[in-house]
Structure formats: structure tokens, C-alpha cells
Image 1 (tube, one colour):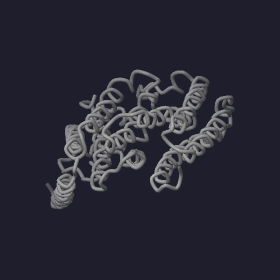
Image 2: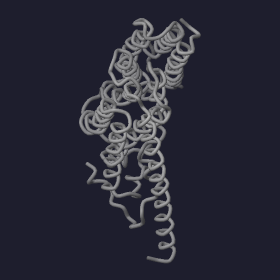
Image 3: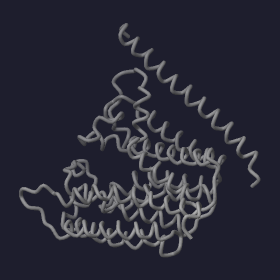
Image 4: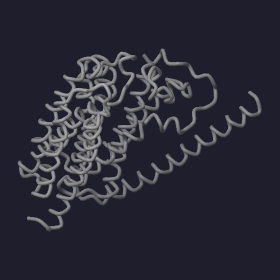
Length: 43
Length: 308
């Protein structure tokens, strides 16, 4: 792998990791909200 | 089929944007719009968090099945100018990654719908994914010139699922919403197919204008337009909506027929700008958006007590 390729490799990996992290965080918040709503749900 | 797709040239990780592209974001805007309409128009109420979750699950299911569609059709996409630069034919992604992404996204969407909303809506979502990815993409699309009619069924699921997410039961109204998109799709797509030169013939997908000719296509456009009109008006007729939706549906459907007539009766000349076909295609998009918006407006007006 040339230095340029390695830089690109790291950039892509980092970008993907960020997207996965944000997605997971989003779902943590969403499931928390769903749980709170459903606990309060009389049905 | 997917195994014949070009292997990725680089060992670089795929850009996350390419995964996003697999979900067909432009198709998804219509999916999200009609799903929101289904949720808003359904009787009863749903907590905003749950309403959002239902629409998210529908969008994820659509994205997952779109990814499976692109995985399966990678070799077909490689042969058409419009699609040859998609992530798979472009060689920017391994086919297995696209397949796994599609399966994962679909599975999570169904699970999310089941856990957060209910298992009837989840079962319908599962059915929609199987319908699009397996029945349409893998089985019928390459086999019948009526493939657009069948594909329209896939696009018709979102408002149905959105509605059922709120009510928890399947009644006449959500089935009518399904039927509206089902009968709307053929005239919409075939109008486009008449004026856009596509390479479907080259890759062996039997599109109606190519297989059966323009005359048959024009007649089919007229038939489906005439079938669509009573179905679009039916929600008002059966008492599911008020005159607000009813009058909009009547006017819109009449205009649809008026615009379809010249497309039906015409034959292409040597130098032809295909203006009636283009007009019909553009109008068909307006038709669906306004019709569903009218449905929501109608229901909002009813809940607010503005109409009887």
C-alpha cells in the first residue's frame, strides 16, 4: 500500500466508523424514547 | 446473477456513501411521503415518537430491499448507461457486502416495527420486502412485460403499512390506498418508457414498449388510467373521506384521463417531441402527491371539526 493509499484507507475507515457510531447513538436514543412512550401507553 | 458482477479492484473499504446509494434515496422520498400520508390519514392517534419510528422502519425496509435489488441486478445494471455507475457495477463494493447490508437493514426494519409498533405492521413490512426483493426483482421482472404492474405493488405498500401501524387492523381504506398506487404506477412508468430510450432490451428485461410495441403500451396506459379513476374516488364513495378529498380526486382523475387520451390515440411521427407523453408523466407525479396531500388535509379537517 502506498502512503497515498494508506491515507485514503484510513480516511474511509474513519468516515465509516463515524457513521456507524452516529447511527448506533441514534438508535440508543430512539429505543429509550420508544420505551418511555410504551411504558406510559395504557394499551 | 450477482456472482457475475465485477470483483472490486481495490481493497479499500467501501465509502459509506455507496452504502447509502444502495438504498435508492430518490425512490425513498416517495416511500416516506406516502407512508407519512398513511400514518396521518389513519383514524385514531399515534404518539409522535411511534409515528416517527413506523415511518423510519418503512424507509429502512424500502432501503434494505432496494439494496437487495441492486445486489441481484448488478450484472444488469452494468449493461445500462443509467445504472452502470452504481456502487456494484462501478466496482466500488463487494457483492456480498451489498447483500449482507440489504438483509441486515431489512431484518432490523421488521424487528423495529414489530417491537415498537406491532407485529401485523411488521408482517406487512416483511411481506413488502419479500415482494420487492424476491417476487419482483428475482422472479417476475425478468420474465414478464407486465413487470411494471407487479413492481407497482411494491411501491404500494408504504401507505398501507403506515395506516396499519396506527390502527392495528387492515380495513378497506388502507387497501384502497394500496390499490391507488398499484394502478397509478403503470401509466406513470409507461408514459416515461415511451419517451425515454432505455437499454432494457439490451440487458434482457422485457419492458412492455419493447416487447409488445408502442400501440399496446398506449392502450395499456389508457386502461390503467380508467381503472385508477374509480379507485381513487372510492375512499370518498365508501364514506372514508369527506367531499374535500372526493372533489380533489374527481378533478385530478378527470384530468388524468384527459391527458391520457392523446397518448392513447396518437402514433409517433418521425420527428416527434413526445409532448403528450411527457405531459402525462409529469402530471402523474403531481397527481399522486396532490391526491395523498388531499387525503391528509381531509382527515385533518375532520379531526379539527371544520367539516361534518
